Image 1 (cartoon, rainbow, N blue to C red):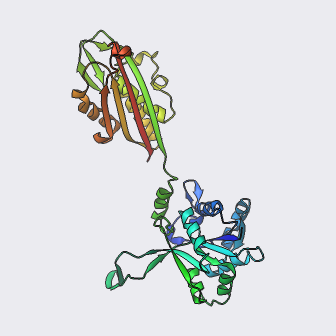
Image 2: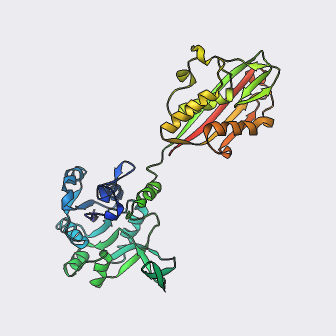
Image 3: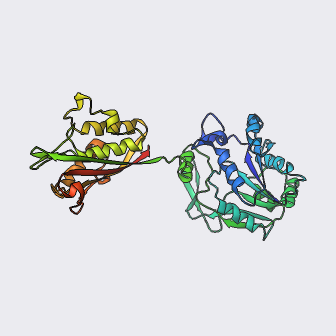
Length: 378
Protein backbone atom coordinates (compact mmCIF):
# COMPACT_ATOMS: atom_id res chain seq x y z
CA UNK A 1 0.00 0.00 0.00
CA UNK A 2 1.22 3.51 -0.76
CA UNK A 3 -1.47 5.46 1.08
CA UNK A 4 -1.11 6.60 4.69
CA UNK A 5 -3.46 8.40 7.06
CA UNK A 6 -2.36 10.98 9.61
CA UNK A 7 -4.82 11.46 12.48
CA UNK A 8 -4.19 14.76 14.22
CA UNK A 9 -4.94 14.34 17.93
CA UNK A 10 -2.65 16.95 19.48
CA UNK A 11 -5.20 19.64 20.36
CA UNK A 12 -6.75 20.37 23.73
CA UNK A 13 -10.39 20.84 22.67
CA UNK A 14 -11.32 22.91 25.73
CA UNK A 15 -14.72 23.95 24.34
CA UNK A 16 -15.83 20.31 24.48
CA UNK A 17 -15.57 20.30 28.29
CA UNK A 18 -14.58 17.35 30.45
CA UNK A 19 -11.53 16.51 32.49
CA UNK A 20 -9.69 15.06 29.48
CA UNK A 21 -8.95 16.47 26.06
CA UNK A 22 -11.88 15.55 23.81
CA UNK A 23 -9.92 12.97 21.81
CA UNK A 24 -9.40 10.89 24.98
CA UNK A 25 -13.00 11.08 26.16
CA UNK A 26 -15.29 8.18 25.34
CA UNK A 27 -18.22 7.56 23.05
CA UNK A 28 -19.91 4.22 23.50
CA UNK A 29 -17.08 2.83 25.61
CA UNK A 30 -14.39 3.75 23.08
CA UNK A 31 -12.08 6.77 23.02
CA UNK A 32 -12.93 9.45 20.45
CA UNK A 33 -9.58 9.04 18.70
CA UNK A 34 -10.09 5.26 18.55
CA UNK A 35 -13.23 5.69 16.46
CA UNK A 36 -11.22 7.69 13.92
CA UNK A 37 -8.34 5.21 14.04
CA UNK A 38 -10.64 2.24 13.44
CA UNK A 39 -12.15 3.91 10.37
CA UNK A 40 -8.78 4.26 8.65
CA UNK A 41 -7.45 0.89 9.77
CA UNK A 42 -10.54 -0.63 8.15
CA UNK A 43 -10.08 1.32 4.89
CA UNK A 44 -8.85 -1.21 2.30
CA UNK A 45 -6.40 1.10 0.53
CA UNK A 46 -4.85 2.69 3.62
CA UNK A 47 -1.68 0.84 4.54
CA UNK A 48 -0.29 2.92 7.39
CA UNK A 49 -1.84 5.06 10.13
CA UNK A 50 0.01 7.76 12.06
CA UNK A 51 -1.44 9.37 15.20
CA UNK A 52 -0.03 12.75 16.23
CA UNK A 53 -0.19 13.27 20.00
CA UNK A 54 0.26 16.27 22.23
CA UNK A 55 3.43 15.96 24.30
CA UNK A 56 1.22 15.98 27.41
CA UNK A 57 -0.51 12.82 26.16
CA UNK A 58 2.57 10.76 25.43
CA UNK A 59 1.41 8.18 27.99
CA UNK A 60 -0.99 6.93 25.28
CA UNK A 61 1.90 6.05 22.96
CA UNK A 62 2.27 2.43 24.09
CA UNK A 63 -1.45 1.75 23.74
CA UNK A 64 -1.45 3.09 20.19
CA UNK A 65 1.77 1.44 19.09
CA UNK A 66 0.43 -1.88 20.37
CA UNK A 67 -2.17 -1.58 17.60
CA UNK A 68 0.53 -1.31 14.97
CA UNK A 69 0.14 2.46 14.64
CA UNK A 70 2.96 4.98 14.27
CA UNK A 71 3.01 7.81 16.79
CA UNK A 72 4.40 11.33 16.32
CA UNK A 73 4.56 14.14 18.87
CA UNK A 74 2.71 17.30 17.91
CA UNK A 75 3.91 20.88 17.79
CA UNK A 76 2.61 24.18 19.12
CA UNK A 77 0.13 24.57 16.24
CA UNK A 78 -1.94 22.24 14.12
CA UNK A 79 0.30 22.96 11.16
CA UNK A 80 3.39 22.00 13.17
CA UNK A 81 1.68 18.79 14.27
CA UNK A 82 0.87 17.84 10.70
CA UNK A 83 4.47 18.50 9.65
CA UNK A 84 5.69 16.14 12.38
CA UNK A 85 3.30 13.49 11.16
CA UNK A 86 4.50 13.93 7.57
CA UNK A 87 8.13 13.66 8.64
CA UNK A 88 7.42 10.31 10.27
CA UNK A 89 6.48 9.01 6.82
CA UNK A 90 9.83 9.90 5.24
CA UNK A 91 11.35 7.01 3.28
CA UNK A 92 8.27 4.83 3.89
CA UNK A 93 7.28 4.54 0.24
CA UNK A 94 4.07 6.54 0.73
CA UNK A 95 2.89 8.53 -2.26
CA UNK A 96 -0.53 9.68 -1.01
CA UNK A 97 -1.57 10.84 2.43
CA UNK A 98 -4.92 11.52 4.11
CA UNK A 99 -4.91 14.04 6.96
CA UNK A 100 -7.82 13.74 9.37
CA UNK A 101 -8.98 15.46 12.55
CA UNK A 102 -9.32 12.97 15.42
CA UNK A 103 -12.51 14.72 16.51
CA UNK A 104 -14.34 13.63 13.33
CA UNK A 105 -15.38 10.25 14.70
CA UNK A 106 -18.19 9.48 12.26
CA UNK A 107 -16.14 9.43 9.06
CA UNK A 108 -17.43 6.72 6.77
CA UNK A 109 -15.69 4.29 4.46
CA UNK A 110 -17.41 5.70 1.39
CA UNK A 111 -16.09 9.18 2.10
CA UNK A 112 -12.55 7.89 2.64
CA UNK A 113 -12.74 5.99 -0.64
CA UNK A 114 -14.10 9.03 -2.49
CA UNK A 115 -11.19 11.21 -1.36
CA UNK A 116 -8.66 8.55 -2.38
CA UNK A 117 -10.34 8.15 -5.77
CA UNK A 118 -10.19 11.91 -6.36
CA UNK A 119 -6.43 11.82 -5.80
CA UNK A 120 -6.18 9.81 -9.01
CA UNK A 121 -7.33 12.96 -10.82
CA UNK A 122 -5.30 15.62 -9.04
CA UNK A 123 -2.74 16.41 -6.33
CA UNK A 124 -5.26 17.31 -3.63
CA UNK A 125 -8.85 16.53 -2.67
CA UNK A 126 -11.03 17.30 0.31
CA UNK A 127 -14.67 16.75 1.33
CA UNK A 128 -16.98 19.70 1.85
CA UNK A 129 -20.65 20.56 2.10
CA UNK A 130 -22.16 23.48 0.23
CA UNK A 131 -23.51 26.12 2.58
CA UNK A 132 -27.30 26.18 2.32
CA UNK A 133 -28.28 28.30 5.33
CA UNK A 134 -28.58 32.06 5.21
CA UNK A 135 -25.41 33.72 6.47
CA UNK A 136 -25.22 36.77 8.70
CA UNK A 137 -22.52 38.97 10.05
CA UNK A 138 -22.89 40.04 13.65
CA UNK A 139 -21.39 41.93 16.54
CA UNK A 140 -22.30 42.34 20.20
CA UNK A 141 -25.10 39.82 19.91
CA UNK A 142 -26.96 41.47 17.03
CA UNK A 143 -27.08 40.94 13.27
CA UNK A 144 -25.03 43.52 11.39
CA UNK A 145 -25.51 42.28 7.84
CA UNK A 146 -25.86 39.35 5.48
CA UNK A 147 -23.34 37.37 3.49
CA UNK A 148 -23.84 35.79 0.08
CA UNK A 149 -23.61 32.02 0.50
CA UNK A 150 -22.99 31.21 -3.17
CA UNK A 151 -19.73 29.35 -3.60
CA UNK A 152 -19.24 28.82 0.14
CA UNK A 153 -18.50 25.38 1.57
CA UNK A 154 -18.07 23.80 4.99
CA UNK A 155 -14.75 21.99 5.00
CA UNK A 156 -14.35 18.48 6.39
CA UNK A 157 -11.60 15.90 6.68
CA UNK A 158 -9.93 13.63 5.63
CA UNK A 159 -8.12 15.91 3.23
CA UNK A 160 -5.99 14.00 0.76
CA UNK A 161 -2.74 14.96 -0.97
CA UNK A 162 0.12 13.78 -3.07
CA UNK A 163 2.69 13.12 -0.35
CA UNK A 164 5.65 14.87 -1.96
CA UNK A 165 3.52 17.86 -2.96
CA UNK A 166 2.03 18.47 0.51
CA UNK A 167 5.45 18.08 2.16
CA UNK A 168 6.82 20.73 -0.20
CA UNK A 169 3.78 22.95 0.45
CA UNK A 170 4.32 22.84 4.20
CA UNK A 171 8.06 23.43 3.79
CA UNK A 172 7.30 26.65 1.94
CA UNK A 173 4.44 27.78 4.18
CA UNK A 174 4.99 30.53 6.71
CA UNK A 175 2.48 30.98 9.51
CA UNK A 176 -0.54 28.99 10.67
CA UNK A 177 -3.41 27.55 8.66
CA UNK A 178 -6.97 26.57 9.47
CA UNK A 179 -6.51 23.29 7.60
CA UNK A 180 -4.27 21.53 5.12
CA UNK A 181 -6.20 22.77 2.09
CA UNK A 182 -5.14 26.31 2.97
CA UNK A 183 -1.49 25.22 2.89
CA UNK A 184 -1.97 23.37 -0.39
CA UNK A 185 -3.63 26.31 -2.08
CA UNK A 186 -0.92 28.67 -0.87
CA UNK A 187 1.50 26.44 -2.80
CA UNK A 188 -0.64 26.69 -5.93
CA UNK A 189 -2.19 23.21 -5.72
CA UNK A 190 -5.65 22.65 -7.17
CA UNK A 191 -7.93 20.98 -4.62
CA UNK A 192 -10.80 18.82 -5.87
CA UNK A 193 -14.00 19.17 -3.82
CA UNK A 194 -15.44 15.80 -2.84
CA UNK A 195 -19.06 15.76 -1.56
CA UNK A 196 -18.94 15.58 2.23
CA UNK A 197 -21.46 14.03 4.57
CA UNK A 198 -23.61 15.65 7.26
CA UNK A 199 -22.80 12.81 9.66
CA UNK A 200 -19.08 13.63 9.45
CA UNK A 201 -19.34 16.13 12.28
CA UNK A 202 -16.41 17.45 14.29
CA UNK A 203 -16.82 17.17 18.04
CA UNK A 204 -16.39 20.71 19.32
CA UNK A 205 -18.98 21.37 22.04
CA UNK A 206 -20.31 19.14 24.87
CA UNK A 207 -23.53 18.34 23.04
CA UNK A 208 -21.62 16.95 20.07
CA UNK A 209 -20.75 13.77 21.99
CA UNK A 210 -24.40 12.75 22.21
CA UNK A 211 -24.97 13.57 18.55
CA UNK A 212 -21.96 11.48 17.50
CA UNK A 213 -23.18 8.62 19.67
CA UNK A 214 -26.54 8.67 17.93
CA UNK A 215 -24.91 8.67 14.49
CA UNK A 216 -22.56 5.84 15.37
CA UNK A 217 -25.32 3.90 17.09
CA UNK A 218 -22.83 2.77 19.71
CA UNK A 219 -24.94 3.95 22.61
CA UNK A 220 -28.08 2.23 21.48
CA UNK A 221 -29.08 -0.67 23.71
CA UNK A 222 -32.33 -2.33 22.69
CA UNK A 223 -33.68 -5.50 24.25
CA UNK A 224 -36.63 -7.59 23.13
CA UNK A 225 -38.46 -10.04 25.36
CA UNK A 226 -41.13 -12.66 24.73
CA UNK A 227 -43.54 -14.20 27.20
CA UNK A 228 -46.07 -17.02 27.07
CA UNK A 229 -48.58 -18.24 29.63
CA UNK A 230 -51.64 -20.45 29.80
CA UNK A 231 -54.37 -21.07 32.36
CA UNK A 232 -57.20 -23.58 32.33
CA UNK A 233 -60.84 -22.75 32.88
CA UNK A 234 -62.38 -23.76 36.21
CA UNK A 235 -65.23 -22.83 38.49
CA UNK A 236 -66.07 -19.15 38.69
CA UNK A 237 -68.13 -16.29 37.31
CA UNK A 238 -65.46 -14.04 35.79
CA UNK A 239 -61.92 -13.92 34.40
CA UNK A 240 -59.28 -11.24 34.78
CA UNK A 241 -57.38 -10.46 31.59
CA UNK A 242 -54.80 -7.66 31.31
CA UNK A 243 -56.15 -6.24 34.56
CA UNK A 244 -59.80 -6.09 33.45
CA UNK A 245 -62.47 -8.25 35.10
CA UNK A 246 -64.80 -9.79 32.53
CA UNK A 247 -68.04 -11.52 33.51
CA UNK A 248 -68.05 -15.12 32.28
CA UNK A 249 -69.56 -18.45 33.26
CA UNK A 250 -66.16 -19.82 34.28
CA UNK A 251 -63.00 -18.64 35.95
CA UNK A 252 -59.31 -19.30 35.34
CA UNK A 253 -57.34 -21.61 37.59
CA UNK A 254 -54.09 -20.31 38.99
CA UNK A 255 -52.12 -19.57 42.14
CA UNK A 256 -52.71 -15.84 41.71
CA UNK A 257 -55.59 -14.24 39.84
CA UNK A 258 -54.53 -16.22 36.72
CA UNK A 259 -54.33 -13.12 34.51
CA UNK A 260 -52.79 -14.88 31.53
CA UNK A 261 -52.19 -11.67 29.56
CA UNK A 262 -50.44 -9.86 32.38
CA UNK A 263 -48.39 -12.95 33.22
CA UNK A 264 -47.16 -13.24 29.63
CA UNK A 265 -46.23 -9.56 29.57
CA UNK A 266 -44.45 -9.78 32.92
CA UNK A 267 -42.42 -12.74 31.70
CA UNK A 268 -41.58 -10.83 28.51
CA UNK A 269 -40.04 -8.01 30.56
CA UNK A 270 -38.13 -10.41 32.79
CA UNK A 271 -36.95 -12.18 29.65
CA UNK A 272 -35.70 -8.98 28.03
CA UNK A 273 -33.71 -8.32 31.20
CA UNK A 274 -32.48 -11.95 31.31
CA UNK A 275 -34.02 -12.23 34.79
CA UNK A 276 -35.97 -15.47 34.48
CA UNK A 277 -39.73 -15.61 34.91
CA UNK A 278 -42.48 -14.87 37.41
CA UNK A 279 -41.86 -18.14 39.24
CA UNK A 280 -38.32 -17.08 40.09
CA UNK A 281 -39.45 -13.83 41.68
CA UNK A 282 -42.84 -14.93 43.04
CA UNK A 283 -42.66 -18.70 43.73
CA UNK A 284 -46.07 -20.43 43.58
CA UNK A 285 -45.01 -22.33 46.68
CA UNK A 286 -45.12 -19.09 48.67
CA UNK A 287 -48.61 -18.73 50.17
CA UNK A 288 -48.42 -14.93 50.29
CA UNK A 289 -49.02 -14.81 46.52
CA UNK A 290 -52.16 -16.95 46.67
CA UNK A 291 -54.86 -15.01 44.84
CA UNK A 292 -52.56 -11.97 44.35
CA UNK A 293 -53.39 -9.42 41.68
CA UNK A 294 -51.05 -9.87 38.77
CA UNK A 295 -50.38 -6.13 38.61
CA UNK A 296 -48.04 -6.75 41.58
CA UNK A 297 -45.88 -8.92 39.32
CA UNK A 298 -46.01 -6.50 36.40
CA UNK A 299 -45.13 -3.53 38.62
CA UNK A 300 -42.13 -5.48 39.92
CA UNK A 301 -40.87 -6.30 36.42
CA UNK A 302 -41.42 -2.72 35.27
CA UNK A 303 -39.48 -1.42 38.26
CA UNK A 304 -36.60 -3.77 37.49
CA UNK A 305 -36.44 -2.47 33.93
CA UNK A 306 -36.47 1.12 35.13
CA UNK A 307 -33.79 0.49 37.75
CA UNK A 308 -31.61 -1.15 35.09
CA UNK A 309 -31.79 2.05 33.03
CA UNK A 310 -34.38 0.97 30.46
CA UNK A 311 -37.63 2.49 29.32
CA UNK A 312 -40.42 0.39 27.85
CA UNK A 313 -40.82 1.42 24.23
CA UNK A 314 -43.86 -0.70 23.37
CA UNK A 315 -45.65 -3.92 24.25
CA UNK A 316 -47.82 -6.28 22.22
CA UNK A 317 -50.12 -8.78 23.93
CA UNK A 318 -52.10 -11.48 22.12
CA UNK A 319 -54.81 -13.46 23.91
CA UNK A 320 -55.71 -16.82 22.34
CA UNK A 321 -59.18 -18.15 23.15
CA UNK A 322 -62.58 -19.01 21.71
CA UNK A 323 -64.33 -17.09 24.47
CA UNK A 324 -64.93 -14.73 26.14
CA UNK A 325 -64.87 -12.03 23.48
CA UNK A 326 -61.84 -9.80 23.97
CA UNK A 327 -62.34 -6.98 21.46
CA UNK A 328 -65.04 -5.13 23.47
CA UNK A 329 -62.61 -4.89 26.39
CA UNK A 330 -59.32 -4.37 24.52
CA UNK A 331 -59.18 -0.60 24.89
CA UNK A 332 -59.70 -0.81 28.67
CA UNK A 333 -56.99 -3.47 28.84
CA UNK A 334 -54.60 -1.20 26.96
CA UNK A 335 -55.34 1.67 29.33
CA UNK A 336 -54.81 -0.54 32.37
CA UNK A 337 -51.47 -1.86 31.14
CA UNK A 338 -50.30 1.60 30.04
CA UNK A 339 -50.97 2.92 33.53
CA UNK A 340 -48.93 0.19 35.19
CA UNK A 341 -46.10 0.47 32.66
CA UNK A 342 -46.16 4.29 32.82
CA UNK A 343 -46.16 4.64 29.03
CA UNK A 344 -48.59 6.16 26.53
CA UNK A 345 -51.55 4.00 25.63
CA UNK A 346 -50.65 4.11 21.93
CA UNK A 347 -47.54 2.09 22.83
CA UNK A 348 -49.66 -0.78 24.17
CA UNK A 349 -51.33 -3.32 21.90
CA UNK A 350 -53.86 -5.87 23.11
CA UNK A 351 -55.48 -8.13 20.56
CA UNK A 352 -57.09 -11.54 20.39
CA UNK A 353 -57.27 -14.49 18.09
CA UNK A 354 -58.72 -18.00 18.10
CA UNK A 355 -56.98 -21.26 17.32
CA UNK A 356 -59.69 -22.24 14.82
CA UNK A 357 -61.14 -24.84 17.22
CA UNK A 358 -57.79 -26.61 17.41
CA UNK A 359 -55.92 -27.55 20.58
CA UNK A 360 -56.90 -26.86 24.18
CA UNK A 361 -57.93 -23.26 23.46
CA UNK A 362 -60.01 -24.42 20.51
CA UNK A 363 -61.76 -26.98 22.73
CA UNK A 364 -62.55 -24.20 25.21
CA UNK A 365 -60.38 -25.65 27.95
CA UNK A 366 -58.50 -22.44 28.73
CA UNK A 367 -56.81 -19.25 27.54
CA UNK A 368 -53.25 -18.70 26.32
CA UNK A 369 -51.40 -15.42 26.20
CA UNK A 370 -48.33 -14.25 24.31
CA UNK A 371 -46.51 -10.95 24.76
CA UNK A 372 -43.57 -9.10 23.28
CA UNK A 373 -41.84 -6.09 24.77
CA UNK A 374 -39.12 -3.71 23.58
CA UNK A 375 -36.82 -2.09 26.14
CA UNK A 376 -34.56 0.81 25.21
CA UNK A 377 -31.68 2.09 27.33
CA UNK A 378 -32.71 5.50 28.64
